[in-house]
Figure 1 (cartoon, rainbow, N blue to C red):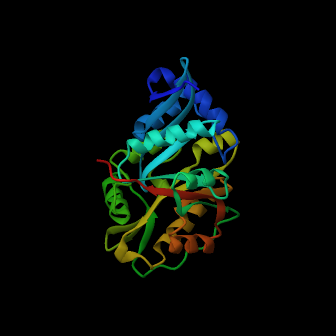
Figure 2: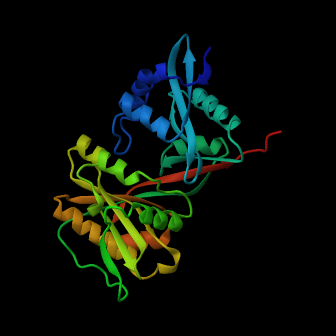
Figure 3: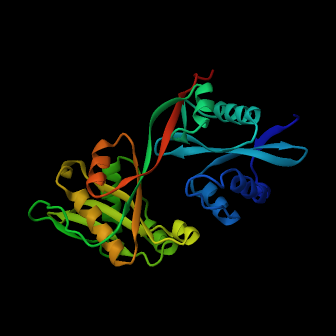
Length: 293
C-alpha cells in the first residue's frame, strides 16, 4: 500500500470527524464528535495528530499529547494492523523516554500493545452510583465548616486543588468556563471543607452535560476532588462527596459518575462505602523507549 504519514491540518477536520465517529461508535459511552468539539479538544489538550493518507484520501489517524499520567497515545483509528504499526512507530519517534495508552480492560487490543513492547501498569476506573435519596454526611472533626464555595473564592479553591494534586489541576478561569459549558452550574455546586478559615478539601460537582444530552440521561459528574495532605483521613472527602450526591439528588439527578486511578486504593474504598461501583475499567499500557542519539 502506497500510503504516507503526515501531520494533521485544519482541512482534514471533516474527514477526521467521520473517521473517529466510525471507528469508535461502539466504544463505551462514546459521544460522537462534531468539528467544533474535535477542534476544541485538539487545541485545548495540545494534541498532535498524525494521519495516514493514500492518493489524497485520509484513511487512518493517531493522536498523542501530554496527560496527567505522561505522554499518551490516543485515537488510534486504523482498520489494518500494518497501518496501526506504522502510526505507533511514527509517534514513538517523536516521544522522549516513556509513552502510554489506555485500553479497555480485556480488549483484544491489549495484545497489539504487548507486541509493541507495552506493559500493563495500573489503570483507570469510572465509578458510578445510583441516587435514591438524601443521606446523612459522615462525621467530620469538630470545628469543620462544610459549605459551598462563595463567589470570589476561586483562587483559594485553585490553591487547594493544585496543592493536593501536586500539579496544575485547575487554572484561573475554570469556574467561569464550567458555568459556560455546564449550565446551571455555579459556585453553589462546589463543595468545600473549611478548618481554621482555610479551605482544606473540595469536591466539584457538575452536570454530566455531554453524556446527558446525547443519552437523554440525568447524571451528575464529580471532579476534581482534593484534600490537602495534612487533612486526609478525617472523613472530609467522604462528607463532601456525600454532600455533592445529596445536592445532585435534590437537583433531580438519578446517578453520579467520576474517575479515579485503580492504584488509588483509599479513594476506591471510600467510594465503595458511599455506594459507588466500577462502571468501566481501562488499563494503562506503558512503554519505556530507547534513548535517542
